[in-house]
Image: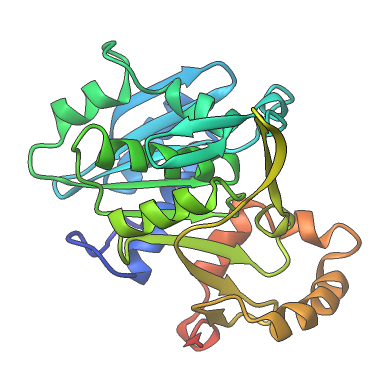
Length: 274
């Protein structure tokens, strides 16, 4: 297991930074002792971790950067978060209420809060925020809060298999705050990143659609990478993925280990295309 290397300054897409974020996002599924042990093997030290309800977040650092990551859906209680679609109000616009509530669990002035940890540990380091699935949604909302509300600069956000998070207003405002710094990875026919998101506005009662924000990196079933989601290729992938993964292809390709496998593929298989 190699030490992480990455483009430490940001912004703009960098493949080594994507791999570093993916590895840290996967570590968020481990135990505290496992995170510490594997973090050292990656050349990173654990500077913060917190369990908040069924959710888990961590921050790993080296001399150049801090990587903040959040765990995705991992137990039945996480579905209470996923299914809480009553609107939540962020400073940038309406968002999925369950995701916002989960993100807020990691904030606050308490000593075990993320803000305290970042202020203690930043010391010239760049901050990168990442997560897989539900963890990617939490990552995006927390990155927005850090940048907009707390004035803590986030160099970039890399998420994997992330569901839709916010309203059109949220997407518009966040895109202005993070120009060229948010990257959302989709693995072939990943069901979670493909599903349309919804939220309910209680006054007046209305069902709204959620939208995605950021730059896409799409892994096709044959191993190529696209800097947008190519709809023709996606249709072809619907057939390819089933033959490769079986009847549960759209869930199989969602696993974090599959995103890492795609990122670690040889360069001749992952030549970026448009």
